[in-house]
Image (cartoon, rainbow, N blue to C red):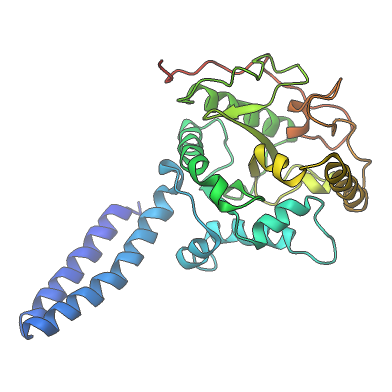
Length: 306
């Protein structure tokens, strides 16, 4: 079996032996420059090697530049990223969420990779919890179109839509268990209300999932499972007036009408509007009926202490 630790150890050992042999015959200043240059270039390769094996375990967030510098063409991470990028930048079929496209272009987004689409995997849940905890303190500085984008390794045998929906809610429930901050007092815990939304780290989020199982609702299709987490304060920035909100939503709905061969979901209502359920907007099905939510409320935190 391929052992990344053995490979890394062999590489490090080989480089050190070579350095020792070469440096021994050099003058001190030349030796120092050689050592510095060699180690500098070598460090990047070793970091990329370990990152590719453990990115989803440690919740590492990456920028666009870091992704292209770390993952060459042909790696599953680069494949997932390029697929995501292609959808947002398609000029012939404009992606309806114009703010996601703007966020990509202005580099307001950060990315997290997980190596399978099993969202119930405790390793993935822990990874996302850590990533969100790292993301939140810097989110405001990233820009008004910021979001955390989770990209999963492509599954050659995609799951059913029902399976993805169940796994998605298991992920959110698992996040709640790992939340180190209390649930906001002004947000109800009961999911089936018009004021509920996902919360983590004391912040409110809007989240959208795209899966390879979606075939009719094109706006929710992705070759590899993709989940976008948007802190809800961005909507206060983008929709600072009622007129701006109305205009933006009308534009998005018009684009959805062109993009999807299915009518716009009746679940897409304004937060807090009577009869609205934000939880039903997170995972939209290929037909205009609400996806089931397996929870009445998410679990209490298992790590938060007063």
